[in-house]
Image 1 (tube, rainbow, N blue to C red):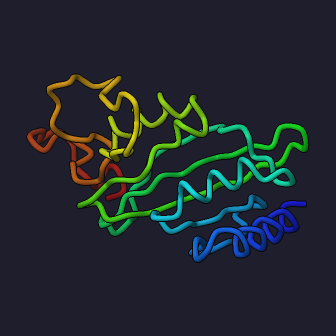
Image 2 (spheres, rainbow, N blue to C red):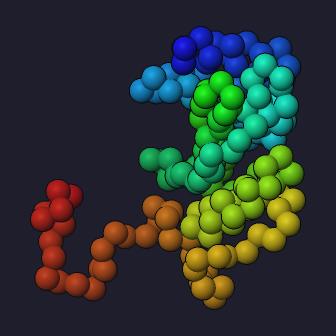
Image 3 (cartoon, one colour):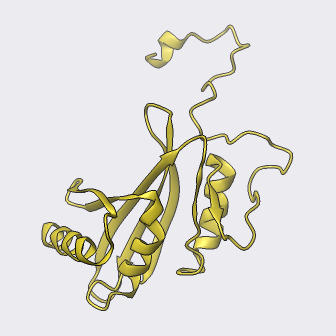
Length: 166
């Protein structure tokens, strides 16, 4: 069913949301769509409000940084509860302008997930009602889950990277 779902979503988005899809693929038997960041809100709204697709439940939202460290992204996991269908929607944008529209107007539960993503990755969600840190201290001027920071304390001399496979 997953491949059929991906084909159906791909076809509906191609018709209803102009030039939104970057890629559509199966990842471990899970439908995954990558969407242009300027079309993410329109795409999410369509996926939620389309009566046939009906992805009305936001299971999860989190941030990601690409391996080349030049882009940040947001991943949404959506669920159609009555039909038990799931889909993953990803979008990426330049790390120097980490900004996309909020999804809190579509799913109020996105509020805390977006705040956590801001707190750890620095993604600014335009239109968010209260975008501020929730787990790290307000004075913190870094985003700890970005790959800009070393994994280990660089002042320690009792550990060698060779011990960790690096």
